[in-house]
Amino acid sequence: MSDLNWQDLSAQVVALLQQSRQRVLTQMQRALTIDEKTSRKDLVTNVDKGNEQFLIQGIRQLDPQAQVLGEEGFGDHVTSTTGRLWIVDPIDGTMNFVKQRDNFAMMIGIYQDGVGQLGFIYDVMKDVLYRGGPQLGGVWANEMQLTAPADLALSDGLIGMSSPLVIHDVAHMQAIVHASAGMRIYGSAGIEMINVMVGKTLGYISHLKPWDFAAGQILLNTLGVQMSTIDGQPLDMLSSNLVLVATKQAQRDILQIEEDDVSL
Image (cartoon, rainbow, N blue to C red; front, side):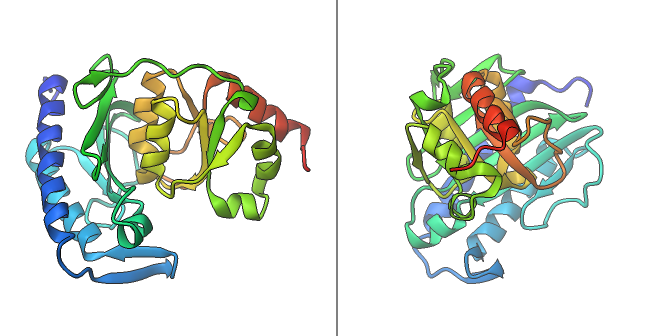
């Protein structure tokens, strides 16, 4: 589909995600089937699985030539980013979904030959859909276009963190938190990235898989926010990464802590 109309495709993805949200809200009124994936803190529900199947079915209709990588395994066995690749997280923040019925997101990132084109993060319970990328020339929260967040230094803002990284002081996380204005933990990569996009936090660090960061990378990069590995290298789109999201100044501060091997 060399003649792909990205504006039209974005509108179609928005409609698909809105349909998916209504399905999720309906299913939330029923008893959930909850299973453990790797541990009692790594959950999957019937809603995760059903929502991924629904989204992938819709994607196949919109873009039948593309590959699809989904968290729950209903997509393709993807070994290359050549061509067009959709990366889907049907419920990001499943623990929040199960325990809080809040603070979870649906995410889709669309890449062409490894380059991000369109990203979508849907804050399901607040009904705010963040969409954008190079093909749209900006980022929107529903119909409001976002401006780039302030380029704050690490000491001037809050930073989102993954609690196990801080508890075990992986890659000097405690020193990074100490150097910041404070730590916040939301329990969902999508919600964390929304907070960075709107300027409530200046960064986020966590160990993430492709479906956790694919959409956010497109949206954040469009707003001038950096996303890299913890040592400043480009992310591998098909593997897990220790991911650093930060304003340019904060990224420099954090990379300096890593380089200096700082500890408390």
